[in-house]
Image (tube, rainbow, N blue to C red; front, side, top):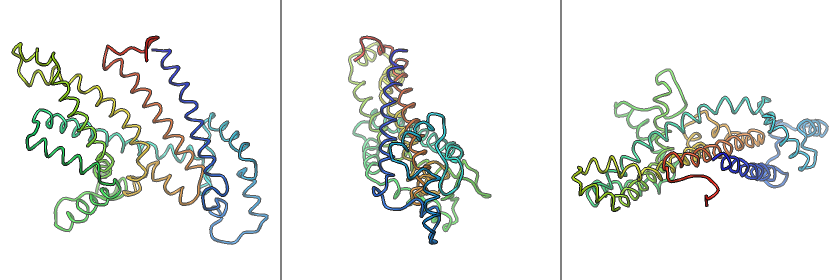
Length: 323
């Protein structure tokens, strides 16, 4: 197990380096439109001397390879540079926003676990019934709807229309207000972020449970006189949940990395929204720092999920005979 963990950690290094290289190539002059120096100074005209001073201050006049080497050395020390627009350390800016993104991702994964697994189980044990058809149609719709459009639809219905109709309504923007606490503000963005993943979780749960129900040991348990409910809860669910739990673990990392659309729609003050604002301002240190933090989180979560296989299924062992 220890050797496996060490190998996985070593495999993260080229992934991390590849991400940073791609980011540096994208920020090279002429690759993407916009001049970060002009964004720093605003629309006002500046002299060539001042322009060159700003370029030199941020090391933008050095060869890209030299800039990359210095940046990588700073990242290893935990220094992600300074924001062009805010003049603050990027690490401090993103660490202030990271807890908000994690809160949103955890709320979404809880919704996914509760509704996705429940819907999949109901669909499997009531196969070809009204409930099975309802789950199948609902998941198909959720998978096909763009996340940003679903978010705006939820804002319109549960935030605007419910308020107009005199019904209890939900906040549509921000993280907290005088009228609503954070726990209420997080409902709509969490539902939006979890929508597609909940549909996939329900589908995986349904297919895995149906496959397990057809196994010989399930029929043997039924023949011994156990009730159908006990067979499902005590035998079938344990094995059917393994791929679902794996999906949920991997999806938590994907949610953290994919919050930019949801946070932007709901003005949720997380890393994704901060990166969205930074992209418009060509504030590359924040964009690169946010991407690096998200990549590291995703890799760590994926590693933890892989390690959990051995605990979820005792038949799995990471040793010299692993594939």
